[in-house]
Length: 133
Image 1 (cartoon, rainbow, N blue to C red):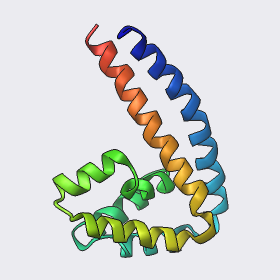
Image 2 (image 1 turned 180 degrees about the vertical axis):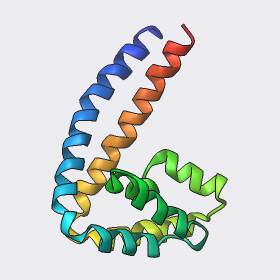
Image 3 (image 1 turned 135 degrees about the vertical axis):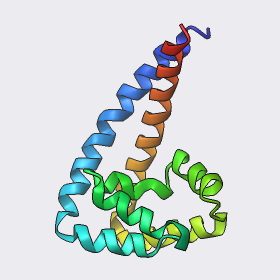
Image 4 (image 1 turned 90 degrees about the vertical axis):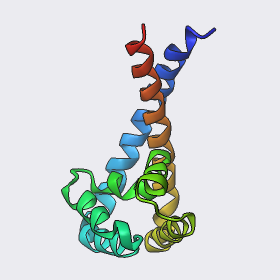
């Protein structure tokens, strides 16, 4: 049974990777006119300790939209919470402000973030299983 975990994880990765990329491309095209306004408003609403870093992540990343999802990602939350020592309430307020900034475009953004989380977790399982073969 345990031998099937990497295989299933690979299938899950493939099933979630392509919808993630399609939503990322769709939202990038949709937000291209307001790109810098969204970057600055999202980074300005970030917690004080992470504000400059979030702005740098979105400006330097080729996919600024994927970098803006950092507050919603599982791995991002853990890093913000324990590495940066940001409280849960500050992260929650940042998520809430991102939701209000995006408005009616938030549902596809959140779905894209969920696909990204599942893809990255599945890829991690596949890579770790290949490492310990």
